[in-house]
Image (cartoon, rainbow, N blue to C red; front, side, top):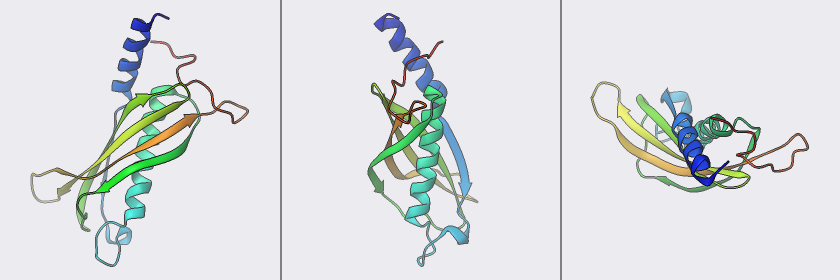
Length: 139
């Protein structure tokens, strides 16, 4: 495959892999401040990132790192959140996915970014060793 065709394939798959997940912050998922527990936010972000990475390459993946997660604003119980995960870098055996969490109040038309971070995944073969993420991909 030519570099031009490979770049076009990557761009097409990145667009297809964009993942949006909407959740409600119920009291059972909050901390003693009645805001979303940070560990819960990280788990949701990792899951959304995993879905986006899997949709990109359709291979078994494992999370190998989470990088620079910024908690810009506490998310109170009783709000809606939307996680938006986008593949932003493709390496030989790895994929990095950026995830933003947007906060919106249930009874207002507002939405703004509250948390953001990146997650890196490695594709694994049947022997549980890293394999190229682009091998076997077709348009």
